[in-house]
Amino acid sequence: MRRNHFLVTAMAMFTVVFLYLPLLSVAVFSVNATRYGLVWKGFTLDWYTKLFQNEFILEAAWNTLVLAVVSTLVATVLGTLLAIGLDRFPWGKKSSTLLDVVLHIPVVIPDIILAAALVVAFGLLRFVSSVFDPGLFNMILGHITFQIAFVALVVRSRLVTIGRDIEEAARDLFATTPYLLRRVTIPLLMPGIIAGAMLAFTLSLDDFVISFFTAGPESVTLPLYIYAAVRRGVTPQIHALSTLVVLVTVILIFAMERFTRKR
Image (cartoon, rainbow, N blue to C red; front, side):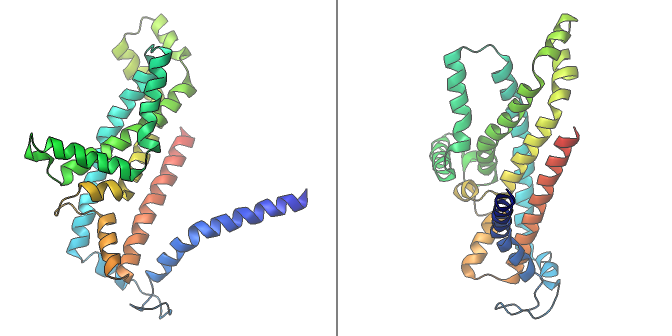
């Protein structure tokens, strides 16, 4: 029994080291005084200082933030409404199965396939209006497309957890549909809505494939900037930038977990 416990613990520790050692290495090199090579030359924060003085990086950071915030807000509203409609509307068995499949497609489909489909769709829409030229607007629409499914799945799981007893009790007390949504359903769903929104924000923040296929020359995001910079050579500024992106992502994940547990 003790031997099995030791093996499980050892495998768990090995998996954690295997997953996070590369990230830790990037963080270490982001504070290394040397510009090239793997030799430790001393601790410095100069690369972070130069990072915040780089206009291209600041513009990419602003584009990333705008893209993530706008797409998350829209996807959270639409995903929440979709989850409520799927779980609370009396769909038939075949219709419910079909809707479940449609809902899961953006989650399981490879990003490259979805990105290629978006390129074709925007190409057709471009004949109607120049608004759909490659740029930030297309990127927002593309991110909303895959974020909605993630938000809907998280909120729907919350709906299943709370059940229908409380809503039926509110109906017995003559609660109207707007009152029921405003005072009963939405407050109970809030932990799931917040969790889905933070998940969508994190996915948008780190997305590369869909952003790459829909971006324009003036809508470069941080993942796109890092990709282009790495092709010219990895510098300590890239290490610093990557460390900050990972740090923000980890903070959001911890905040989502703690908020959900607290609620």
